[in-house]
Image (cartoon, rainbow, N blue to C red; front, side, top):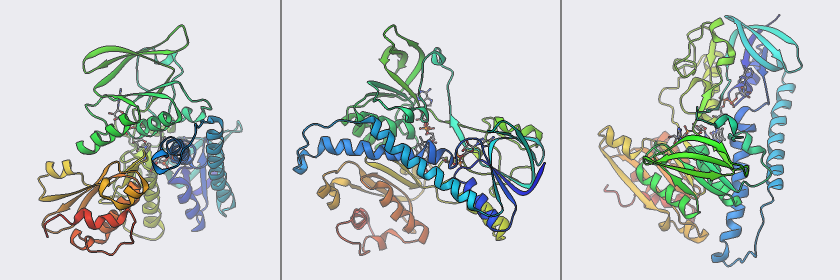
Length: 461
Ligand SMILES: Cc1cc2nc3c(=O)[nH]c(=O)nc-3n(C[C@H](O)[C@H](O)[C@H](O)COP(=O)(O)OP(=O)(O)OC[C@H]3O[C@@H](n4cnc5c(N)ncnc54)[C@H](O)[C@@H]3O)c2cc1C
Ligand SMILES: NC(=O)c1ccc[n+]([C@@H]2O[C@H](COP(=O)([O-])OP(=O)(O)OC[C@H]3O[C@@H](n4cnc5c(N)ncnc54)[C@H](O)[C@@H]3O)[C@@H](O)[C@H]2O)c1
């Protein structure tokens, strides 16, 4: 058995930087990873999907550059090249992360699956076949999440895809049926539509993007429709079966009416579940909620002293930047004696459709529910000079402001560079820059952000 000061389980977006910094701070540290360095983000999430979003955008530009005076005479998707480029980018990031860990003094990298055997003791089933027992006073759980597989009749008999396995495709599906229409559904749906698949999407809620304001969801729905993607809302999938021709027939209920859809591929995109079961948390006494998320307080401490949970496995917003911020909170509290918490931290996010949806703070509907005294500023992208010049005026930007203090409470930007424009507004929110100042800020022309002058101009002083 080997004793460490600190053990990190999972080399994801919180685990890797935390393990490196603890080791650099003089703590004898081990990081245990059952699969690849970088976790979901690098290997199956942000990096590969945004790489494919770029290929899909190139296809879209080839098809839509006529009005810009550039005639492209036919184009072809080389899915093998699309995949090869993605694999190379993922591998560079994965191996870069691994080399950085291996170079760090005081840090051991153990490839295997960790399971608790006692409060502060772990047994690691090594990928090489053996077992290693390790112990530490501090244990940090960063084991992430995996695709939620629903109970649907016949699902086990078809070769369904997840957001991980779809990344292995080197041929474009003829007809991709996607169950679920939020982040994963929307990003893959648009991407494969642009690669040439017929795409049908099924969403069980009454509308897509149910966490967003209705006007955002409606505009996004129209953007997808315009690209030829069919989205059925109020849709439940009740059964799948393989047809004699090798296709997949889905039985669905759409707005109460039963129907069938025949497709070639099915992607499941209805959410993710925490990877906590294999940890055997009973042996250490760490509590989980009814869905298996590890319970933590606002300092990310579990109910067992010295054991922390970070990132997706603890529930809450499941984003890379949140996992990364979890690491900074835990590290600075332990090593720098800070008193940081997760309370009141901003949770910005961006859906990487084209155009993007950047979001931060409160939405208009939430503000109304809370009966806040707010004003709403809205500007169509069709009034943004740069959007007109670039030939893409889809979407709009919107901000929720406090009518009394003039502070910005939230923003949604559905448009080209939506994530970047939202980030400018986030900086204003964090710095307490009020909307009446922003409308007279001098921004470079013609940037997208320059339009923030006009976004706030119509609001009464
Ligand atoms: C398709 C897709 C696209 C995404 N796109 C974005 C995006 O654009 N922007 C964004 O912010 N977020 C995105 N996300 C979410 C983001 O990837 C996650 O929020 C982030 O990776 C969470 O980091 P983490 O450190 O909590 O866990 P992970 O990155 O999932 O890492 C957990 C690691 O723990 C390992 N592990 C699990 N159990 C054990 C065990 N018992 N022993 C040893 N190792 C173990 C796993 O193998 C894994 O490597 C996306 C997710 C998906 C699925
Ligand atoms: N750009 C990004 O930041 C990004 C991109 C991809 C994934 N992610 C992360 O990955 C996580 C998982 O994404 P996701 O899109 O799978 O999950 P999600 O929870 O965000 O959305 C799931 C969608 O599926 C619907 N749904 C649930 N059950 C259904 C059913 N039986 N039939 C039809 N629809 C059903 C839900 O109503 C919802 O709209 C997200 O929470 C997100 O944090 C982030």
